[in-house]
Image (tube, rainbow, N blue to C red):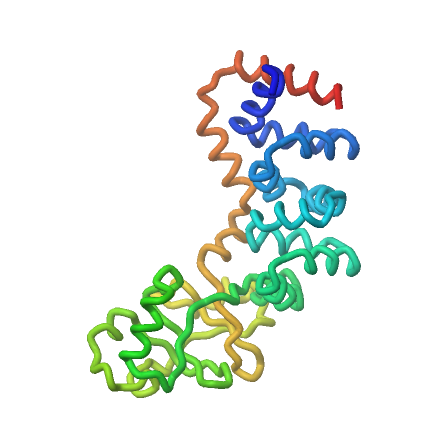
Length: 270
């Protein structure tokens, strides 16, 4: 890698927002060439915040092997946003290249309009069966500690939401008791078809819940919606990223002007 390439990468890494604006202003051919010259982890980072149509355009230009490598590093939310604006055949082609579990979860979310709670569902929320004993439940938790929050949703064998239980309470209970006998059955929940704006106005979200359980019309547990995912709707990621980048602007105006010039020169070469 020569000095120009090193400086170009340093500029893109340190001043992401400004570099992104310049990348988006390039012709499609030059933009694809430039993105293909960057490391895949950083390309994935750029695609997270780039105009979604241009992100989709880039992914569709890649061969299957590279597309798989890139999409594996994209967040679930970014993938969902990109897939929403692609036509059916292109969407299916991308889904076929994804891990089967991720693809299945994306298909579930994409069934719902973007303005509804269903579009924000995290299908991987940890839950426990109501007929498990406390001892069995604690063993399940030990196997997936990273997925467990302060409250755990309880479902029956048909995935019907039955209640929830606080982890703190579960730890102190008799090991032979079943979850169904000790859970709180008066659980706040939300229907997947509910508009996000209606949820924000409803006031039904208890302060102690980080996640709200999401169900369908038959009370089947679909997953959860988090405060974080709602916050991204109220405060879009782009504005957060911009603030983070601005915090790193101590590089100075001279450095900015110099690297911007290098970037423009590099762009003209592609």
